[in-house]
Length: 248
Length: 240
Image (tube, one colour):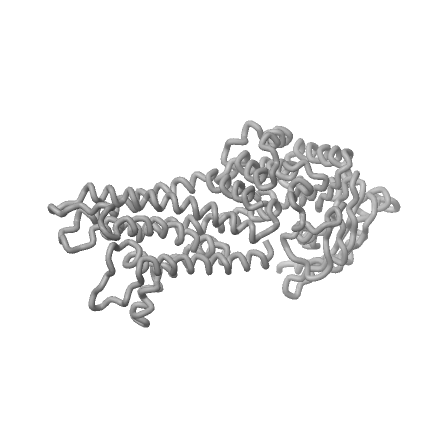
């Protein structure tokens, strides 16, 4: 049953031009920023892989917004009632939606991450040696960064199911991923390491642990991936619970 | 066959549908009449499991809607004029629905042809006129070749030709032995289309009858309707 619902959701996702535009801009932005930051790296001591992946920080936002819209677009257009008439089992519907969107965002995220890495590596300036995938931690950083697109996208999908209105859900997403961290940084320094954007920048996209005098203790790459997965899972679980109980 | 038993739904202090019980039988068009705000759309949403009843139940062929394995192949519904994404083409919209209920792809082109949207099928549905949107909604309802059809105000936005088309379509679907339940606030239209009538006001059943029976003893079906619903209309305050 979930297979045919997933087919339905795949047709819905791919038949919107906005899906392809958003994904194209996501890749282009991630690659462009990565190349720019990579070219401007002058210090041989910096993590060039991390710089090449700098574009992921704004890039995941687009994946998150697409996740939000994949859900809220159903409500703003009224399609949700047609969708639920076709698939009255609401938990199955959300699971299929998340599976389809998660896989698409994962593929696009990996493409964005790898292309950004190779493009930035090919354009390293100031006589620095380009990083290669064979170096310690590099392949892991590139792969996990690609996975972050999918996880932030699923976080957006879950928030969309909870909030149901596009603008409000995008607001919650941006606040949760980009704004709260600024406040947390002041109020509870130690917790900042658990904020999605710092996980992304300092745990997933780095080849070696980031240590600085003023920084919190950042999570390891795998622990960071686990936290992002947990955030997405919580949002989807609450969204699914509400979807099953609310009127459509 | 649609059965509603003691169907009740409140929204805050308002009782939108109040202990409503009726049957809609196969083989004829049953009109669902009531003033604006009388609970027709809510009743339809309750039957389709989109909203939850506070009490009572709705059954289609003896089963709850959400227990149907391939719901679109048993029940076709048209709830609102524009229940599709404006950026998606009519064909993609229908193809997705068909995939979700294991309906053969060829059926999509069949229903597009039936409603006269074949040439517009590849265009973004957001550009459709209200009438074309209604036709797409009818195509979606017919997609699974269902034995039961629920249509909420299907003639809204249609031109006279479209109104006549819907009328003939509904009659022919009923003549094939299907259950056709169609809401409207256009009494004259129901007089031409329906054989049976379920009339509600303020969420309560006022009549479960036939058009012939209800018109008898009144100058017109409209007069009979107003007599029946006069107690049940919520008059709005006249703005000063």
